[in-house]
Length: 129
Image (tube, rainbow, N blue to C red; front, side):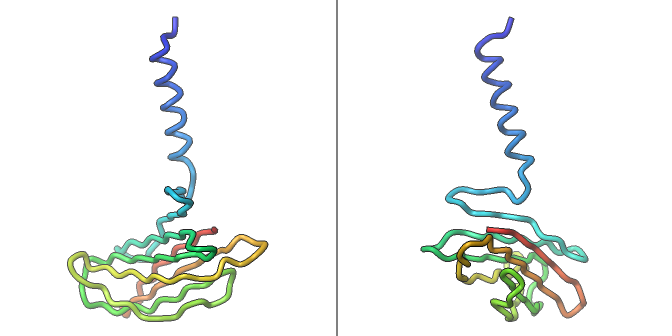
């Protein structure tokens, strides 16, 4: 016979498993967070957040090496919205690029962030908001 505790535990485990399976996990307050891919040992992540009817974009690359200048490009539905450089800094050897972009009406915004290091390593992350 099932107890109330056993049923509650099973429901909780099922709910947690369903949440863990969602790609591009949705964080609190409507944030969208995704892990990116890098062609070498670095890591990257992208976060999209609502910001007064616009979208705040945060792209981070962690190389674990300070002082490396990366070229960074961000696009929204294929349109270039930012092209800049960012330098990895102590203590973690990472950089973050933050900007607020328009939330295009009537369509999902597909944001792609790409960073390239002088050594040729490329990091990429993409998410829709």
